[in-house]
Amino acid sequence: MVRCHLSMLMGRDKMKIADVARLTGLNRSTITALYNETARRVDLEAIELLCRLFNCKVGELLELVEDARPSDMST
View 1 (cartoon, rainbow, N blue to C red):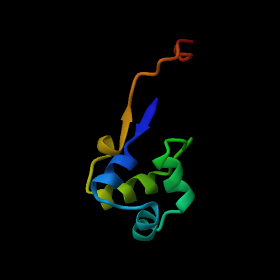
View 2: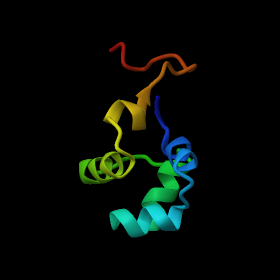
View 3: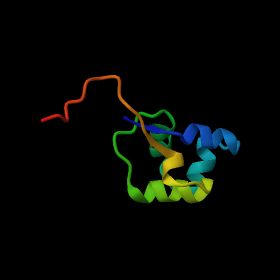
View 4: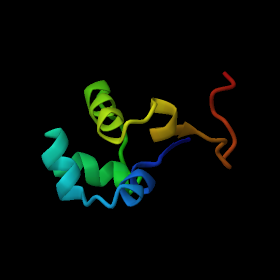
């Protein structure tokens, strides 16, 4: 599972969703989905804009963590 640390980065910099939308040009719904970790897919451009805004690396924004469910990828 991929975890998104956008809420942590926004809290660190005391930003609201509206601030991130204004500064990146990303749609509020995209930012909200990432903030709430409900996004199913993200454009590379969005990742780049967020990393530039928060001056972070992709690995600081997104993290691959072990899922508690059994893997279906064994086939």
